[in-house]
Length: 408
Image (cartoon, rainbow, N blue to C red; front, top):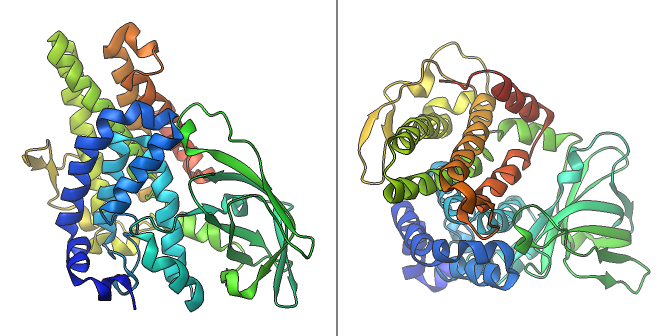
């Protein structure tokens, strides 16, 4: 029996989009935000913050309700992601690995794996990471899977896996001899198999930001992945198609980071009462609002047919957009001169994260040099969200934004 069937009250609570965002925002503002600097550096603090999301049934938002998840629509999901990132980049980065794993499990036809993990993921009773970015690399595949009796033998190196010591397992991606992509679940702890296979992990990397997330590399030697642990197979190059289709998704993290910078600017104005700070806030806030409105519109039903940035030649879902200008719900018309493509929007959000966090450093003056200062933290987080999920197309679009004027 699924968790939702066992507890109808929880089903109602986690299935209501407005309730999800209200519960999340209250937790993030009241609990996470005051400890954001510690969460960035202390793995135990991050673990507690993650479990706080689980205690509020917020860790399986993409999982169907029949399997204990919230099954929210894309707009609600990315509002949530943006909110988390605004208050803690480390928590946002960690929980999205788990949310992605839940989405993968939900799409699998492996009923046994779904039954094992999905009903427990929303509350954080089962925590799963991901490690398949290596599938984006061209040339000799970093991780190879060879069909054998009863499953597959996996050998290679996974360059990035986040959540060591926090997640119990992770979704691995490997390349088959014919180029197809294999996805399965392996343990996130150094393990030796009786048949000679092994999986080992490096020490956590020392990163510019989010050290608490314990990002490591993994080395697999003749690891036997039984068919029972396989999620699914996808055609060769499927990850690149997914990247093109979902190019906008990572932009919401950058947008949340930009809002974190705006919060610091607003606080600095309250202390210093300088007109130049107010002017900078007003200008950047308006642009962030425009970018957010355009990104949300790109997720709407009216623009679903141009999700991959196709050129339709009209304004599609961008007509009559209203922009929320502040937290009390005031709105104004969207001021964009044209309908941007999803790739442009992703680059715009990245550009805004860099500019807003740079402005946060500027208004914080010398105190921004302190590692514990909020401006220093969000400035470093902007680096992470600039390159997270980066493809060559995203890199090009990001550079274009840097060497030319922004969209508006």
